[in-house]
Image 1: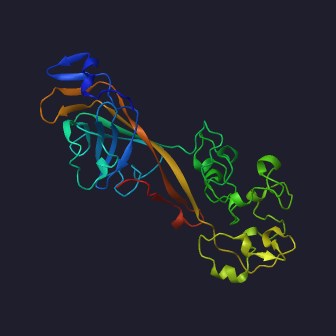
Image 2: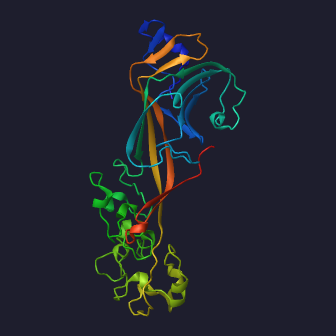
Image 3: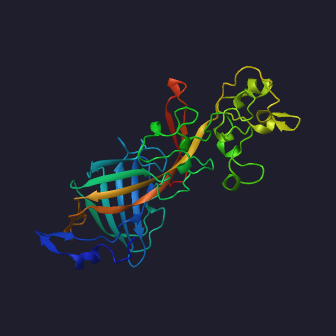
Length: 347
C-alpha cells in the first residue's frame, strides 16, 4: 500500500479537468494487501492509517459467480480464470476519509461502527468494470519446492507441467487424480508421505524406500513387498469388515511377528478384497487479484468534483486457502470435486 496523504491530496497530480470532473493519474491505495468478509454482500477492502485515515472498498452482490457462503473463497467455482462484471448499484467501489484510525474489523461488523467518523465519501456510478483474476499459488513455477498435495515430494518430481491439463499429467494409479494432487500416488491405501524414507535416513540423501528392491519405490508400488498380494489387501479380516470408506490402511494395525504385513513377503494371508480408498483431501492455496477500469467516483455530498481514472487500476490482491476433496474416477456418481472452505475469514 502506498503511504501518501490520500485521494484528496492527489489533486496535485491532476493533469486535466473537464466540466467539473477531475481526472487522476494515481491513487493512494493501490496494489494493496486486500481483505474480504461478508455474507449477502462480499466486501473487499484495504485501509490506510498512515498519514491519513482512508479506506477503499468494493461491495459486491453475492449472486452469480460471487460466493455467498462464509468463506474466504470469493469465487464459487474456484479455478484459474478471470471474471469480469460492471460496477453498478449492487457492485460499488467506495473511497472514504475518516477522522481517526480504522479498526481491522470495521467492514465486517454486523452493525456499522459509529467511529471513526466518515469525513468524506466517494461512490462509483454505473461506469467501470471489475476484473477478478484467480490463480492457484501452490503450483508456482518459480518454486521448485512447491508441494501442492503435501506428500513430501515436490510437484516437479511428480509430473507437474503447467503446459498440460490435470488429465494429461502423470497419474501412477490411474485414479483420475494426477500425482501432484494425489496423497496416495500408487493407490495402495498407504499415504505417499509414509512410504518415502529408507531406514538409513531421508530419501533426499539415500533415495526412496524400495522394500522389494524391484526398482519401483514403495510410494509408486502397489505391492510393496513383492509377494503378489497388493498392499491394500494385506489387512486383517476383522479390520476389513470394520473399515469405512476413506479410512486409511494404518500400518500399526497389521503386524506379523513385529513386521508390517504389507512389507513382509512371507505373509500372504488375506480374506477378499479391500474395497476402501483413502480420502484424497488436500489444502489448496489461491491468490485473487482485483483490477478496476474505466470508473468514476462521485462525492456523496456533492461538495467536490467527480473523480475519474483513465487507466486500469490494480486495487490489490489477497491470498486464501480451502480444503478440496478429489474423488476417484472409479464411480461415475462420485467423479466430482468438493470444495470446503477454511474458517480463517472474518465474518
